[in-house]
Image (cartoon, rainbow, N blue to C red; front, side, top):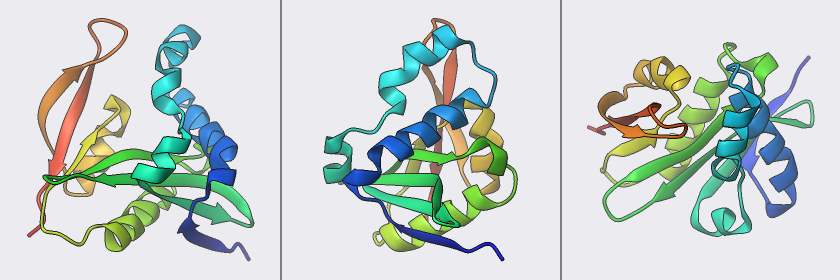
Length: 151
């Protein structure tokens, strides 16, 4: 029997979490040179642990995903939501995201995410709506900016 738990990540988890985010992004078949362009954006820093609430999804004592949310005065920002490639499409992302929303979101303000184009359908299935696009790297690539209003 597999056991899963979602718990607050600690700074000691940073290397494992960064491996998850990089592997998850790479899962979509992006070229190596693009992955290098995005490396700094994909990797958590010590500062992220101070500013964001980061929860890890642990399956059989192994981190297989994480979600990070940062609150500002106007919005909650989903800064990271990653699941190990072999577990993508099995409901773990939804489980992790739902848990984090329950744990982190207490005020009635929008939740936003700058999504990977491959994750747009996932976020739409969670109630997000695309309201704009943001140019990314390499030039000519755009990311959907998505928002979910709480009612």
